[in-house]
Length: 228
Image (cartoon, rainbow, N blue to C red; front, top):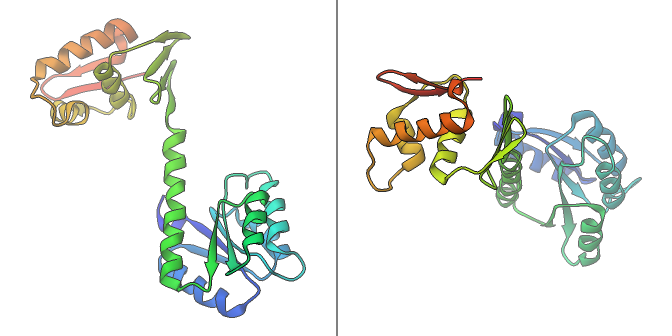
């Protein structure tokens, strides 16, 4: 996900913090929205569906703890990353924050550059979550479980040897794309013992026997592709 597509909601009742932090995050390329209390935070979160919320604890009208609980219970915001801003010594608020559903907390005062670094670290979870969601993918009637190295083809479970599995996973990652032989060797075998082109052919033959002849097409002089 590109920075310009990432939405951050910054919530604090101190105008100086809103101005300085939002400036630094905007300079980094993020979309930044602000709110000055918990009530505004809930409204803005529902409206903008941010990827990350930086939430102050002590605020008028509605504090950060209550706002976090409401946000966590709102459909579509369950997976939003929430981190609290807490003043030093507010250990009780850290515990309450985690109980309310926060993912992390940041102690203030904090230098803007340090805050930006912490934000980047939190946002890496977006990538990790996306990668985790791709552990199980479906291509046509084939379900590929990358975590368990397991294939389900038309409802039938198939256990493939590691290289056959990795070759299938590569080809199905982009159906109808022709993968050149050198690319296949690099992605599947990498820096392992040098193997020849015939190794790919043998593995493709085995996949055809197990998955289906029609799914694997040879592009002479180039490589192979997976078709639905």
